[in-house]
Image 1 (tube, rainbow, N blue to C red):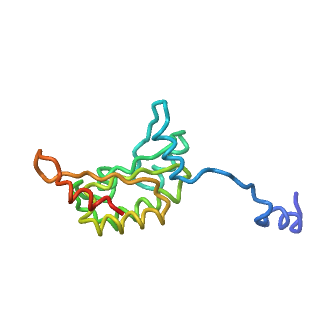
Image 2 (cartoon, rainbow, N blue to C red):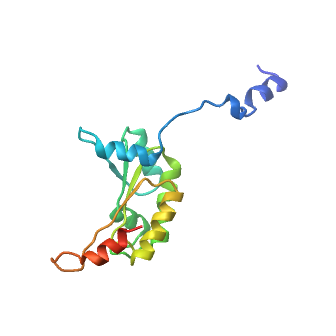
Image 3 (cartoon, helix red, strand yellow):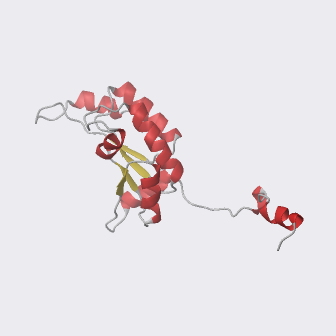
Length: 154
């Protein structure tokens, strides 16, 4: 049996210099690699921190943050009922729990170009690797080019 002194020395936290250093690429770099891969790559849907961690532990190289799944987890319809700040909070937990990239379903961008630019800035701060938006005007016609380009211009 260990003495108290032996127990203390073996359970003390390691100094930063003793911690193993990893050289894992940034999440944005990982996502770009997946997108440019010559082979078929898969992302799996996750809706919170634990499902994202399970996806990573199962071996998936990336996560799809589905608007449908996140909305369902919040108990609302997938009809822009969850605000961008609510979605941001969910994906922050997902990003913190994993080291693989997250590609977020940004629905219609949560408003005009100002909203999209602010959301993208906040996603970058939280380590989310990518963001997709749907551009449609409610009819089968193409979305007006000026409005669409205004949403994605930076």
